[in-house]
Each structure stands twice: as structure tokens, then as C-alpha cells.
Length: 124
Image 1 (cartoon, helix red, strand yellow):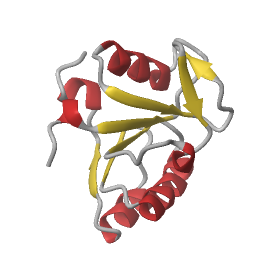
Image 2 (cartoon, rainbow, N blue to C red):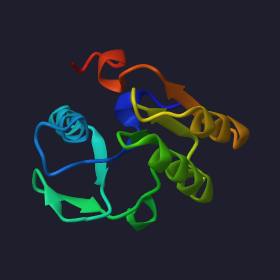
Image 3 (cartoon, one colour):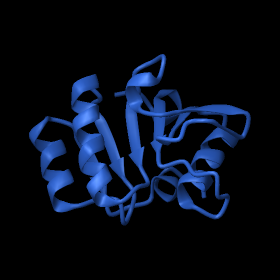
């Protein structure tokens, strides 16, 4: 498995609002010079980076998807990850649901939940 700093990372739930965790996580990963992409159905640009409307729109397949969205949306993201053969999903606290966790496990994904990816990787 690749170390975190070598992975292609997608943050689903990047917001235009600087106070939102999706935005803060995205910008922190960008500041760390990681290979990170932002995803929001609205698209656009944040921090001089293109924001993709969905995972399939990205030009490269992510190694890990971080969800910072409502649990019902995370369940849909798990399905997108399956279609794209994404092997790892990190559900930020408040983004997970028992259904999303079980679905990701059923599809053979490495799933992490109940922990902040930024704290776990020493970025915050």
C-alpha cells in the first residue's frame, strides 16, 4: 500500500465556505503539497484548483476518497467508488453511516471511520 503522501486523494464535500471542514481539509492537504482533488456537484474552482463535479470526472482514479458530506451522500459515494475501483475510503466523523460502512466493506474497500484523517496523519 502506498504511503499517504504518495496517494491520489479526492475530498468529496469541498465547499466554497472557508469555515466548512471539507474546505479546511482540502486546503490543508493542498498546503502539504499532496496530490489532492476536490469534488463538489457544483464544480468550479477553489484555491486555484479545479473542483470536479463527481469522481468520474477526475482525470486520474483516486487511491483514497475522503467524504465530508451527509451520511446519505456518503452511501452514494461508496457506489461511485465501487464503479471506479477505488480501494480506500475515509469517512470523516459525521459523514459515516452504518449502511455506508457495511457497503464499503462488502465491496472490499478499506474503510476508515470515526477518526479525522488530518489528525490521524499528523497534518492538524
